[in-house]
Length: 265
Image (spheres, rainbow, N blue to C red):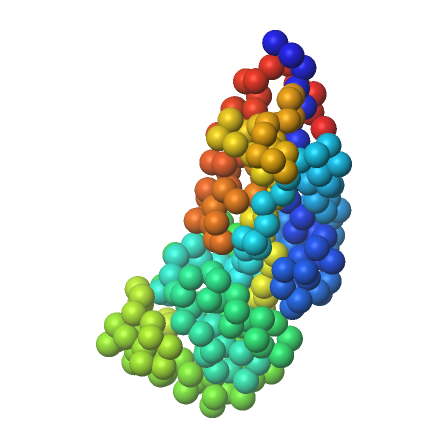
């Protein structure tokens, strides 16, 4: 068995110039989901992709990247039990829309941020406790006090939530076409927090075959060079189902790792 090199360095979500070539709105103020509060070092700058290119490898482009709109104030893992409002206290999107649609609506907001609201009835995920302790999510006894803390006119937010609850009762929202409702937002206390958009995954990257072998610009495998995980491009097309990134890493990693004696880079 010959010695092999496996490139598994991730994508380029932290490379601001590279991602702005794909979408000019993704400036440095848009953080990555791996480093949402800019407290850590994020090394996903595409260095493995550049390494493959230097060795003659081809890059698959045109699929772009994926944005994640649920890394801050949201504490649910399912749709239909929270609502999103802008800084005026009005809804601006179907909260159950696909991520790409949500991302476009969020990026169109003046500061690319919004408020997410749920209530006592909803089933919170495991992030609720830490987010309450860190002040990322807050709890209010009623809508008016919640609105005041947000800096929103209480009457506007009350009207927004009343309209939303009527839509929830009817199981259809005529304003944004939402039909996924699991409950009203009506039982205090109310949980709310500031939410924003994050760069989550890059979908462009090193071109490989089904055996995780890096291909050159003519489509031929480069002897002894493999790639696995997010550093590989074209696996998912222009979007990706949640959780499939891990599947990709495991499958391609096993394919690449079984191809000989290899050195991690």
